[in-house]
Image 1 (cartoon, helix red, strand yellow):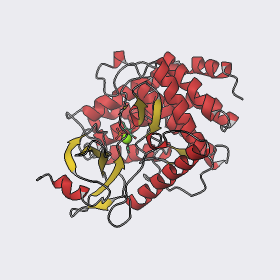
Image 2 (image 1 turned 90 degrees about the horizontal axis):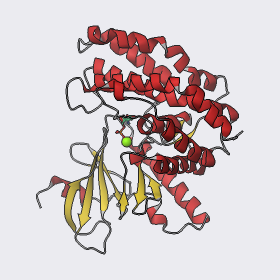
Image 3 (image 1 turned 180 degrees about the vertical axis):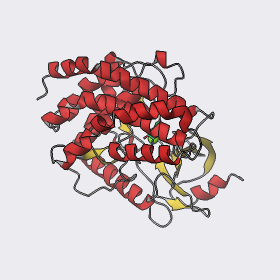
Image 4 (image 1 turned 180 degrees about the horizontal axis):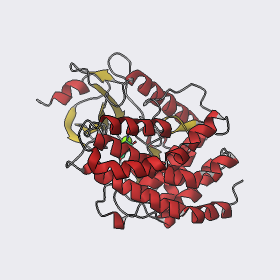
Length: 364
Ligand code: GN1
Ligand code: MG
């Protein structure tokens, strides 16, 4: 075989004869392949190239992932859960014992066991949104007693104050000469900045804690079995201490939007109350017991914080000349930013309804 990936695969001694390596679905950040092994009795694997421009400290990244998967595995064992290999990811050791290897170009690769008969969803309905809420809530709940400290794999990842500073700096530098085109949107977002940075202020005042969160809670980051039950949470790169708003708000940002995250026709974008309700009910069933009353009260804020933050991030990247997110056409990041901004405005209008619904669940 001439595939250069086979050389990387050889660094993981547990993997037997490889039949084929095929690209698997890919997010905007890492590149992912499925390793098909020759023997049907043997496991298949997932090979992933870690984006080291995004994740600059790969040792820290893998430390976090190892701690989290070990902790969850132990929890499931204690609870007597069956079929644990399908309910938490397992990463392979490379020839030097670490859970990743570096190739000649300095690229970092890791391998996990492929969970057979699993599927990911790209869209939710009421039922799957409820299940996603329950399972992301349970994921956070299982990690509340993790004793090993985890680092921030992307420092200040969901820090709204930093994202605003980055937008301001990008606007000032105007390195791609795009500011004249986007100045009104920059101004509109900046006008909300003070209010949208309130979580960071509450944290400094000691009123809002951080928890271990997933920080990329798309429904596609959860594996379902063939019967539609959730197996496990995947894509653990961004697991780190954060406000619970990260998991709650970012899920709704992608799932409770009536159109795609890059829908050019913003009239098609609105916040979906049905998905909000189903997800919130599931999430609070599992996370309700450990959340503080202030965290519960602020969940509707989280539902608008995340489209806002994502609008700021996409717009910053557009102004910067598209250096972070993969794009398919020149104005892609601007289209994304406008779509997220529209979702932010729609979520804002839904806030009274959201409050009413959460109150009706009688959590605290
Ligand atoms: C990135 O790679 P992907 O699609 O899972 C980004 C998220 C954004 C998302 C927007 C590490 O996630 O924070 O919400 O794009 N991940 C990182 O689509 O920046
Ligand atoms: Mg991801």
